[in-house]
Length: 356
Ligand SMILES: C[S@@+](CC[C@H](N)C(=O)[O-])C[C@H]1O[C@@H](n2cnc3c(N)ncnc32)[C@H](O)[C@@H]1O
Image 1 (spheres, rainbow, N blue to C red):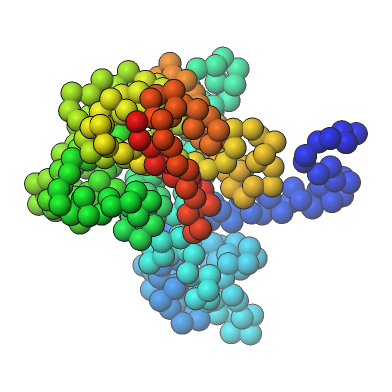
Image 2 (cartoon, rainbow, N blue to C red):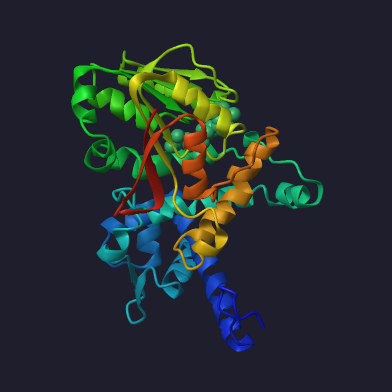
């Protein structure tokens, strides 16, 4: 018996109950992902109580599948069911966390687990032989990441994120040069470019597909102050200087996070600021016991963030690199002033405001 261990040791019967609860939870998460992708959750949020046929008809889906999905939703505590009328209903208080109308849509976040489960065979092989699984093995990753970014970055920019840097919104309104590293599909930088037409924005990312998507969006929106370039940020050696550099959830899965951070420091004008959003938590697993979303973070990391970096021959920091290591690496990269912020509504992320 380990008396100093942090994880509670349960009697076998209680542990069985704990495990069964986790199995049910994981199953519901899979079905929430399907409910999001098929539009069922969005449709149900708008519908009065109805039968499986009425719901399937309204959503334009196959009744047999919808009924099975509803079974999981009812027994999983998501959807209310009246056995007398055989009617199902998504209560508004649940819909608030499960539809595209919400900026805290857990059904959108639920998609990560099935997306990452798609590479399980490759990951099992990596456990034996080392190495990593490349970005190209995750066909839906950038789409799901962009949806997540809409909630954690875009929705909170004006109210929560930009105010972390004093005076930043005034500078953006007047016109400054901004770089976003590891921009993915670029939703964050495009939202900024729309809101601040006097400023100029550049997004850099390794992914050809994500950059092509971001460029299309720039054309669709008719933006003239944003451009995107495919670039490997390993050993980043910038040829331009910026007033603001941002990194939204994009440092820990780099092949060369230290080299990228050093490049970011170099890319800043003397009075410039680096605004970095990354996963919250400690670098020490012991400090993360009991932390909500800690198992989620380590799982996402193992099945994606860590392995995509290792696949590039990289550092493999992983999503749980933690705030202590993040601050050390920022200091090593040449940032002498670093402020760490957390936002009340966002338990997944930490925000660093760094200056040289
Ligand atoms: C977790 S995603 C975040 C994307 C985006 N910032 C967002 O919030 O949606 C991390 C990004 O880092 C990019 N990335 C990974 N390794 C890279 C490298 N070596 N050079 C440049 N970008 C890289 C990936 O392509 C991916 O778009």
